[in-house]
Image 1: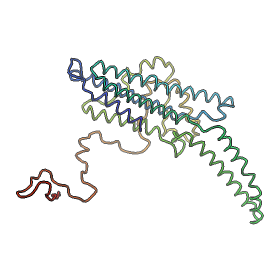
Image 2 (image 1 turned 120 degrees about the vertical axis):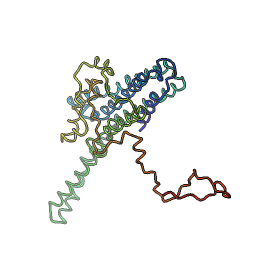
Image 3 (image 1 turned 90 degrees about the vertical axis):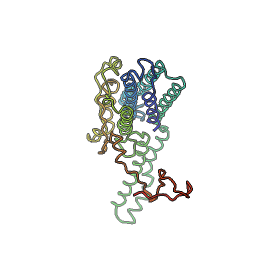
Image 4 (image 1 turned 180 degrees about the horizontal axis):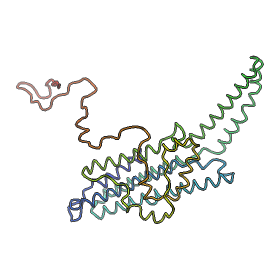
Length: 349
């Protein structure tokens, strides 16, 4: 929520500021104002896209990632992708927002307002770092080892109890069932603790945060709907106009990554590590320009997008309160002999 709030505030600051009356300013050059705000919007959307990829990377901090050669190789690929993705957010995208703010200052943006925009940029950086901390946090290895040993060695200690159950009931199957259920319950408890360490795994479990829905869908539509409200007569927003990200494409000579959405991950019916690794292998070679054009913005839920015509939606909105009460008519003048403020409220049909 903090990330979306700060990003929305930054875009509004760039989009609604009056560029003044000087020649070539907002009042004289409408396209310059629109192009500047669209450039800011593309940068903010790119931040959400890169964070979506970063937060949905697979885990690379298990013991096998430190003790085995295949695990270290897998962790190296994941860590390289994570550094590349998150570094792009901090080092390039947020720096680009600072350069756009400098463009506003050259056009006459007041220092006090620029300082407020700098504060929003700082808060946006802080929110991104907080998400990284939540993604990279892991419980101590000693605690994980203790849980693993407990869940493995505890069932044999209950063997006399299971033997007593078989003796009392006269059925070995019942004792074996109790032993199996106990071992499975302890193993499930240990696995649930491992899964809850990474909260951004909604495409693998039911208890995770749906990062794709929050950042690639809702975050995007909130910014685009804000643009439609500020620029009602402007053409539809284009995520990449062929100029944005051109420098990035020159630096990244590799082929563009094949983006895999959450819906396709679910339909593949594969283990989460395998399906997520497909995104990881292409992450170091992401073409920043093409990544904006290839991102699927459709929600995983079957829902209708809010109407873009705000005036029509306001005309059809039901303004009646859910409570049965009479509202005073402020347009009615008090009759002769009636004191203002003491009249009875009129009834609206």
